[in-house]
Structure formats: C-alpha cells, structure tokens
Length: 363
Image 1 (cartoon, rainbow, N blue to C red):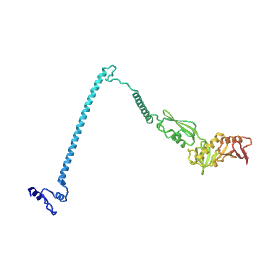
Image 2: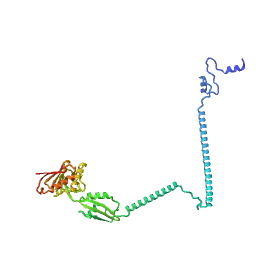
Image 3: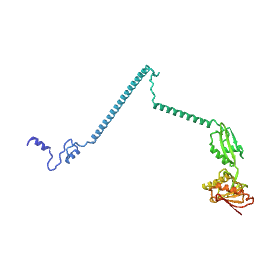
Image 4: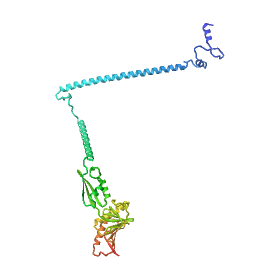
C-alpha cells in the first residue's frame, strides 16, 4: 500500500458509524454541521464577527454620506461661481449696449433705446391706470365719509314743517338725536318709524337732512276716524287705521268697525288682525268707501266677507255682498240715498249686493 493511500486512510473516519475525530481549529457548531452531513459551506459568523461586519458597514455608509456632502458643496460652489460670471457678463453686455445706444441717433439719456409699445401693452397700461384711479377715488370717498361722520356735519338745529299737535321739543325727544350729534349717524327709515310709534297722532312723519346742520320734520296730523272694540276698551283709529289711543267709551261721530279683532292694541301701531285675508278685506272696503265720498256712515261690518254691511246714519242698513264691483255698488248707494224719498227719519234696509240696482225695504 502506497504512502498516499495510508495517509488518506488515516484521515478518514472510522467505519461503523463512529463519530469523527475532533480536529483542531474547528468550532463545535462547525463539527455538528459536518456530522449532520451538510454540504461543505462557509460556517456561520460568530457574534464578534457580526459586530465587526456591522461596524465596517456603518463606516462605509458614513464615508459615502460625507463624500456625497462634499460633492454637493462643490457643485453649489461651482454653480455660484458660474452665476457670478454670467452676471458679470450680463452687466458688461448692458454697458456695451448703453454706450452703443448713446451713440445711436434718438437714443435716451439713460443709454436705452426707446422701444415701441404694443397694443396689448398699451391696454394693460390703461387698465392699470384705471384701477389706480378707481382705488384712489374710493380712498378719497371713504376718507370723506369718515370725516363726515366723525368731525363734520353736526346737528345744529331742527325745523318742523306741517301741522302737529306735538311741540317741537316733543318731536326732538321722539327723534332721539339732540343737537351736537352727527347728521349721518341715524338712519332715516328707523327714525321715522320710531317717531311714528312714539307720537301716534302723527298720520305721517318724514325726516330730512338739510345740510350742513339742520334736521327737518315733515309732519301731518292724524284725525280720529274709526273705533274698534277691544275687550273692555275701545280703540280709536285714524283714517289710515293707525291706533291713536285706547279709551273706555267710544267718542261720538266716529265710524264703528265690527266683525274684526285687533292683534295689537298699542298706540302708534297700524291695525292688524293677524289674518292676511281679513286685513286685505278691511283695507279694500274702507279704501272704496273713502273714494266714494259716502258720508254719515256709523258702522261697517266685516263678520261675513260675502255679505259686507254698512250702517248709514244709524238708521239704514246697506248690504253690499262681496267686494266684486264694490266701487260701482257704492256709487249706486250714494245716488239712491240722495233721493228725496229718504228723509232724516227713514229706516230700513238697502240691498245693493246685485251690482246695477238697489232695492230698499222700509222698516
């Protein structure tokens, strides 16, 4: 047997499944791997080897970041130098153009050559000028308004135009803005509504500013025209149905309104029933009566909107039916009552519900 064969036999594991001999330089994990028949591969790293490997990886990453940062810094420096050189070249070119423009006929004193303005640029310039002008005008108007409401146009006096049962002092007190207040501090509509409510015997009240310092009151007096029962009280109303006052006994000579109920009994408010249909009916009938000129009416009954009744002189009941052709019906009633047949003692019922004819029944 040759010497090489003997050496191989000496290094081979013993037969019979015996465990391999321990070889120096191999770890227990490597020997277990070979004993299980695994392929000859690189053995796993130890903990110290893994730590060293991770340290080397972190070091290489850190070096790469440092190198990238250095390259970025150099790139920015190159770009900055390039921009600086470009700016220098642009300035030199501009100076050359300025020198050339000065030597050119028609050149401007600043060394620039006049450029032709296009239509679009001209429109833009006009638009900018218009916007600037509008802005300045708005600013001036705002400043003027601010001055007018803070410094200028103080109320210096009052003037009353028209007849009134109230004194000028009462009108001023109801107005609420004494001498010294600004003329534009109050709203006219609110001031008129406030005065009409506080002063019920004003049929109409208008407030006007007479610059620079006078407030004018245009007033018309309210006349007592109707009465309306409201529980134990009686409301006295004007021709426009404005509530003038509340009394215990109805004054004589006024027309009584029956068949409706006032929603509010406060003086200074306009009569309202709370029902739009009823309010419209009352306004329509009373407006037609006022237009007809029919006098000596003592009552108007709205209990039945399809059978409106009037009481004439407290003696004759006038039946009008519905509001259809109401003006014509009232004209026929007025013409009929002018007949000599009707005297101061005539009583009965005049039926004018059928437009075009009237039928009187005495009794």
